[in-house]
Length: 415
Image (cartoon, rainbow, N blue to C red; front, side):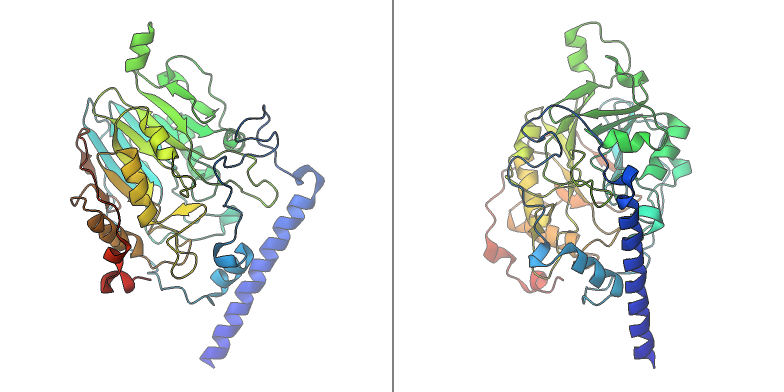
């Protein structure tokens, strides 16, 4: 009887999924919604006049392990894919960050997934802020298993928001609207995503030299930057000493609907800081040609890198897919950035792929050990627990990764 009820529930879930897909298809077939064009501009080495693309190698269309993403979604909803179990809820003790952190000191607090609060140089910075319970349209999608590490009402006033791309677990319109209503922050995003953010009633920023007073959203292309200092920059030398946000290349894709794939750009970011070293936020990314971390490092030494390590195991045995890196590739990104320290993000909040809840941090520890790094250079954070980040210091050189080093019972037991 129990087994029959279980099968019935699975089929009901599949029916709900197909109903949702049908509804979304109906929406996109209505003429005004036939396509979502978020950006119009000149052709470039990563924009063909209609859609953006990865200029290094376009491997993000390839379904994981040869199966379709639709098949993965169906198995995900029906629970028929034998994925490792996840906890339904993980206890979190939220913290209350200070109002400001001045000077060279840097304090970071992981809120969950790709959301990090970074406080330094008198600036409060949020990456890909998501406070919603689900990551998907109309309240559907993966549900968070961890509460945010900082209650929204305990957030200090936010000055700068970085939005890396338009997937629902990174661009959360409800959260962005709450931040806008409360703080009027400066929101920086790659080309095209500003159109989506404006749909939530957030206006475009009025670009000026000093962006401590230019609230709203601004879209930048790879390689473009905007100063975000406090106070006027009368000379070029003064401007060079001001904090700035730089949009940098990574390797991913965009879509919020069925027909709008790659209508907007994706990116990583460098936040150039006046002293102590820069902040790097990788956004959501695969490895691609693996040269983009070195491009980011050219803007100056990186004090802290926020690098994704989760949603890499779409099928058992995979260590990465075209659009996501796992801990092995994440360690390569860390090395090529030349970062003094890194924190692994994009894991343990929303169940997005195949790996077990704690596989990303456990595998990361083994990879860093095998590469000969001292402990603490690239680690994971506890949601809600603030971490002090020391100023930049030259990191030790790693050794090449010997695959045999990972052939251990501890790694083999990971799922």
